[in-house]
Length: 179
Image (cartoon, rainbow, N blue to C red; front, side):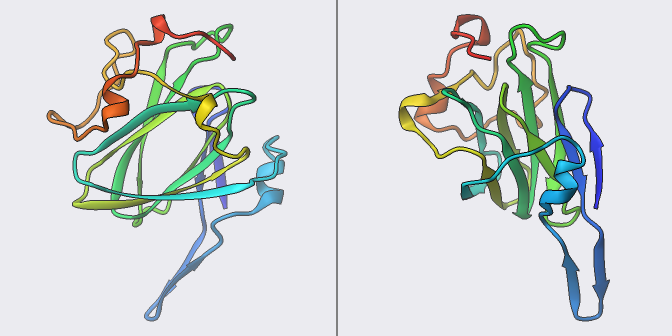
């Protein structure tokens, strides 16, 4: 397993070692010791799985009290995965970075508390799975506008498919900062 730091402090890109042959492939998708070597000491308590159609944008989401660390990956299809630093005292506050995650590249992303997260589906469908360090709490769920002009995420879609909830998310300048 190869783990490297992203441009934003706390983000980790995880590339598993894949063993492939004529039967298919095998790889280790999670190893707690490997993450601990990078300072990630936590227990994941919930796994989530979503399926979305092409051009769907989900996000930008985060949770407060106390927040959620996430380990995310696409197990079917391809997504453009985005994180936004929402830690008010961070030198990279309001900055974003994006990564292509796919069933083919098997890359994963560790997203710590203090980041908003979202993704855009590039393939016809995508199954997206993620481990969470805290249970989902509807009362603590928050979001930021996917198209916030100040953040200026470069989404690879011109006509996104969005939920009603994501259409109502405020811009970052209009949210209470918890991190």
